[in-house]
Length: 441
Image (tube, rainbow, N blue to C red; front, side, top):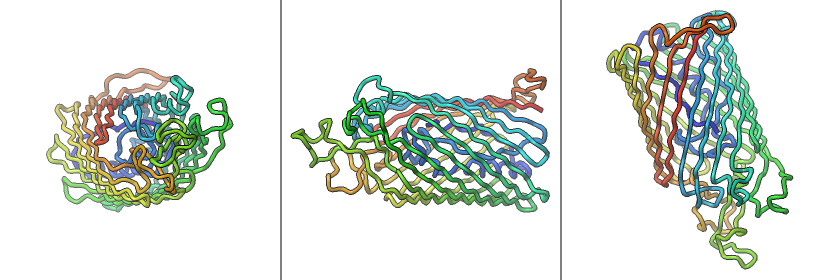
């Protein structure tokens, strides 16, 4: 349930050695692919890169030998809407999430680095509070704990990097483990790079259903459990096209098997009203049901153009489809501008559009004869816009120095970022994030 925290953006022009590192960073950014969205978060089906998304194990990023990097990240996310999936496609979608995280990147020797990503996030949700239909119920908020570790080693030829990672995530209703393996091969001239990575998520989910569907109602805490497995393959090819233009292509097929529905999300039917109740009344819903097998086929293109020594243009396009019937297109542009030697502004804009899943219908539109049914608006047809601004301050000699555990630590840089998101369904969101970067020689 972590809000998406964007990392810092630089504007240096195009030396080959810089691009090799940049390619590697791009590869790592893709190493936790779209399949990670299978995690049990408040918005597990959102495809447009906004809102909440979990993290998985990642590999260390390159840095100067001997330098230990420490990043302290944090974010605050807030959303509002009127299509709560917990209440069958109607109701309050207000949600807040606070997510502090610490990232470590530690050199073990000249060719091997270890990374760690440890954090928590605390969320409060008006919609999940309605699982029991009682205000201030235990489902109103939750805390997720996560820890992820990675190890990367560059071989003797200095062109091949192998890596592995593992992680765990825990909250009230699910436990998740993930494993990652990556192979990166660069060309001798440093202008091309290919990477292949595979990631596996193994999830165990408590079957918490709406209170009225449980025998014993809110007093029944004997939840069953189910499992889900997600396997992702990420293939990325990146190349320098000219002195100013760089590009990368990626494909990230995903297979998910197991529980893909959210058991506490209600669905109300136009032709189902047991016990003499009217359709839509409490007691006439069923828990969401989705197929137990899903294939996802995203492909993306990234372009980076160094317009001048002070201005970059970054473009991104992704096409997505799956066997649930969703087809999606996502476009994003970011334009870092170096307004002084140490101060960078980077405005960004993202547009997303998608078709509805075959199994989606709004409140009271499903038939009780449907085999699969959901009123989760993340699976509906919609378009969305996200716009924002980031800033980075990174003085040549850092913002300051202090002693920590007998080592001199440099406060390297600070990043701040704000994003505003609006969906055609009426959902709006704001996210503020920061990144404090430190280096210990």
